Figure (cartoon, rainbow, N blue to C red):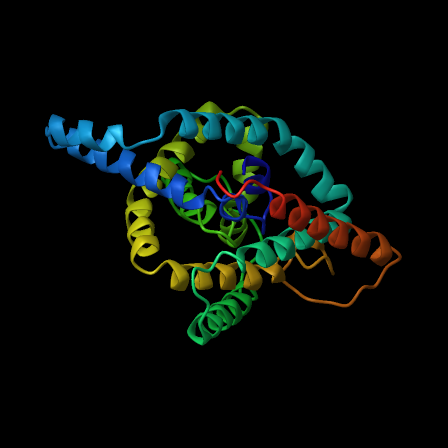
Length: 277
């Protein structure tokens, strides 16, 4: 999940969904945020009840893996996006396609309304991503980092729309990535604080939606993933542009191989996963 969240266009939520841990993760986040809210109100008994529902071993292990991946891969991904944007974007494209295939098998009961909702969401996301502006924020302040963290974390737990993609669209991707690589603890800390606040608020809404309308939410999430393919289409500039173009260089064979290989690996690996994760 951490590796995916570093990359614009690839969502850590997608990885959680296809691995079968998505609802488990959202449930634990919701319980933790409810417990914090109760503690702040001074209701210790209710806070204890919520905290007991959190799978702490699962959550801490997952967070450790995410943090490790972000700290170790941020520089590598930054270099690869600069030196091999087309091939890398093609691999991301394949990962998302494979994830869409797997997620489509998770419906409890498929109905025409699910297909219609997925298509509508996918088309809307595809069109909206084409409106994304390029360019970065110059010398962002603390509140900008805080707000960016709150927005990005909502996308990070949504399959299809990555937190990194949101940062690209609001012009903060380069600033946040540079802060991580430069170990700017103040900027990273403020960003993380915004992420915590955003996660606590958004997880409540998402958990209720999944419990009350699982298949409708899943259809919308699949639409998000399918629509986000626009941002990882390799041409013309990898993930640095939402513009679409036909292959125009000699890398199209390598790019096609990377996309097909990534999709194949995702489908095979996730179909072979245990039924209970």
